[in-house]
Length: 419
Image (tube, rainbow, N blue to C red; front, side, top):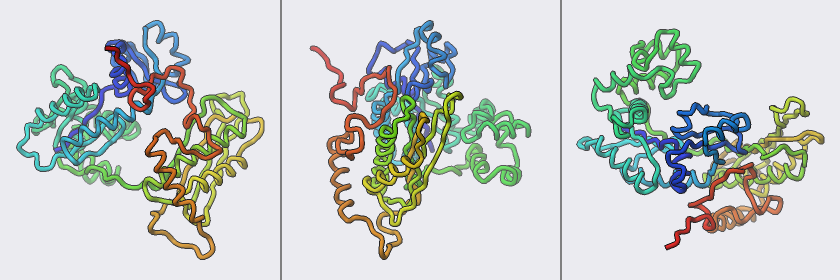
């Protein structure tokens, strides 16, 4: 048996936990640099505030309808997500964190459990311990648990936020209810293609011949079809090391100052290097990108990238940052205002298994230095130890004019109660 646990309007729910005044009020959360709407409460959805709405175009609408608009508070959301996932691991050890607000669970050896009751227990514990409302869908396969979750979310009064597909009749009824474009794993183009084939619902998709699906689509869609038929074909994903690591950000404003851009690139490079060390890997290549604001048609446009090939693999912040800064200096053009930059490390190899070079090697002092830096940053958090060419006050510079306090990750923002 599988379950999909999904947090309802997660970003909004996190804000409401610490600000009860937002309960029952329409709320919208903005993307990086306060750009567009990326999360809405049910009240905001009812007012027809669209997902992805640019806030500068919808500001008057939000004010007219008393919609509370907030900046994204990623430290808070990340911490609350970790709390929810840790609670889920109390119910089964087999948990796949699918995104910041949802996870798949697998139940092995739970044949005699009442899954509706078990799902209700999960939902109540998460709500009691974190204040985050959730919906739980349970079924014999991953794809069907996604369908069950949609039903629990769509009909909260009838399901009490928990729905279990535990019979053939329930499976068929659910698949006939679900539109083909809403099936997990079927995108817009594939949905259009299947609709032309006569598939209007998920049930129609399961009626296609296996040979046609395999020949005209792919093995991925065939596995999805089998999963929807109740034959478990999609397993929980195991955590594996990444084949490339990227840190890319939009700036809060456009900049034509090379020193500022070099500092941003140094910070992005340091983030990539830290992630490399966490997964015990090193990189052979570094890609640096820099681009202007393509939305400003009248401004001078420029996009460039540089790839650096290293003589020997490294995960040293010193080396990666130095090479990345050199690359962005070569890309930079005077008179161009840049909006976005990024660093990508590629050609990853495990630290304990790579080709040695006879004449090229990394400074042996770097490894113990990186261990010391990582140890201090893990102990004191907030990346207290940085390179000299980084901003010592702030890691990510974003326009966040409507930011709520970091209630759970910053001691200065902790809620104070007067008794």
